[in-house]
Image (cartoon, rainbow, N blue to C red; front, side):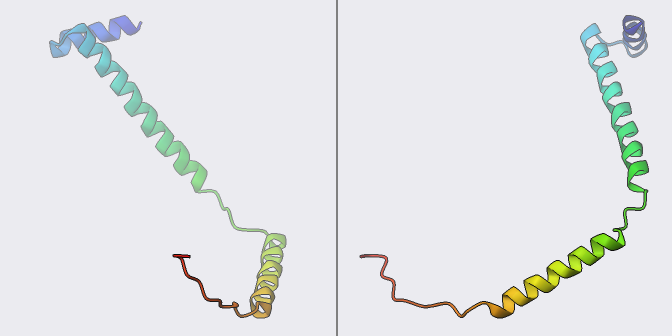
Length: 84
């Protein structure tokens, strides 16, 4: 089956067998990439909004982080000599 298609391209475009075989593979890659593009586009169109429980968890994490930032101490500076 593939040899018939390759032979058709070879006769139609007047190219060698290896070139026709490579052209056939290139067409396959092009069709596959187009199919993956539209397949991924269909998957991405779904609604992916977060649930209310997720929003509550994230809000509580933000509050915890805000408290941790407020409690953090000032850095203790010390003299540093990289040559010694």
